[in-house]
Length: 588
Image 1 (cartoon, helix red, strand yellow):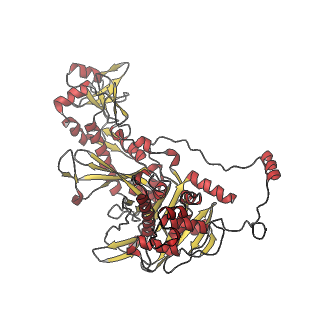
Image 2 (cartoon, rainbow, N blue to C red):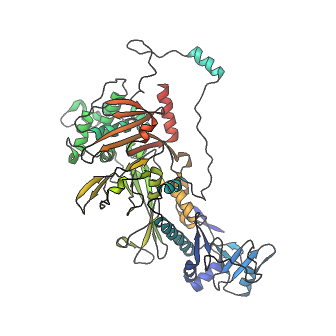
């Protein structure tokens, strides 16, 4: 017999387990918590009175039986070796109330009368709590000098993740017959103005410099990344947002005094200008003016933060679309506007009570993920641009110049972002089960991946204690190809809970799309210089070739230049979208 919980099949409760719970409650399960031993590195739980204990059957004294079970009522260890014999079942039948036992090697409940596994949420909570505490203890004992080891751990796959079949992308190459067809039915491309052949050494279409309008390198760098974001570029170039129709619909045609500013319209005009074929640098003055009207507090010729500008632009596009629509849609659904269809994902936050194991889960939409560079400093450095899309700076005390030393990796930052952490005593969690504030563990994960993932590296620190700001110049290694599967909620829950069913009462199994977990890097926004006098530059990857966009200047660079750059914002697109974009660039 089985029942459904939230659409998932849950096994029917064992009558012997129900009877055991009615007589004893959950106290026997809590008493087992001191005997739980977690084996590294896989994190599998076992039951042992002492870590070095070798259990054996109390009747036949054999320790090599297929299964050994400890009676929950009297702690007797007995074997179960079907179809030959089962001392565990004999013990249960001769002693009423001793039907429930626990597998000493797997820490799973077993009914010796039904001869089947049974599930209890309190027992599973105790096991999961022990595993989480062990993970915290293991993480805190690692030293700051083990950066290289952390990189290897961050890049490795969890041990019990199911294997996925990977299909490598192979670009199409014509065979001999197709070569003949192409030769007989193809014509050379000519320039419409002088009828000369288009040189193969020219820059890709749409790659155009942007003039600096006075400390606007922060804007130019982000706009270059947005102009070459494949889903965003396809949306505007396919006339999905027509600025003339939008202005006419809002009664603002021909630039009347009652014109309603629309960042999406200015973005559409900029896409048309950049992809027109003109190679002279473009001045985005109209877009700058519209952005100033949207973000009046940032309207000045002073240098601004590129990440704050990025969030503000997406917020402006979203705000305009929301005013035009009668029915508001959730930003996390990715359907409300083009900004969220491209960049919006969903984060999952689990807060677990360390006393009883009760877990509170919340979901928040985000358009980017902010990552801390410090590998072993206090605080988690976890934040994201959620709902309000506001960029917040964590107030942390400056810890010295040694933060600028060493090497961090993007995978290491993501591993730390999704690692369980113990909240401080001043952040006690109100447990709905204990009805009091308790110490807790918190773990972040990614429930839904966006089409384009933006990672913001927190290089600017602001301290309210010392009333000063500083920049962290630590070097960051980032891969050109990134697999996001290890950081998904489904993967983290499967790694944490194994085959325990209660964490999957939700729809995490369906929330992860394994075909879209592979991402390719296509844009890197870098920052050089000091906090108050720096310069932003963007590196773009088009047709597998890197280009440096330094305001109005566009130059071709090699991979080593990009890898050595001081990354501030990294833009990754789903792998198949990147290949399609590269094919179109090569064809043009």
